[in-house]
Image (cartoon, helix red, strand yellow):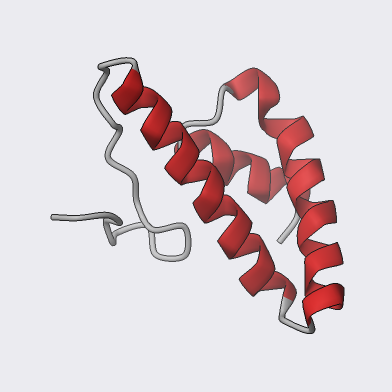
Length: 84
């Protein structure tokens, strides 16, 4: 996955648009490091890190009293994630 694709995914998941490119670069670097360190596929490391970010953004929205955006599954756009 390219950093441009990661940035697009982050924006769909609720990342502030002005932070998407920098965050995508950081996530890519961290996922590559974790993949080597833990001996797991890059995609698995990236998916885990993106999941953590999405949970954080959802928690922030709830704490502010705002709605949590309906998000699609990062790998399957038509599949909704989270509880029904």
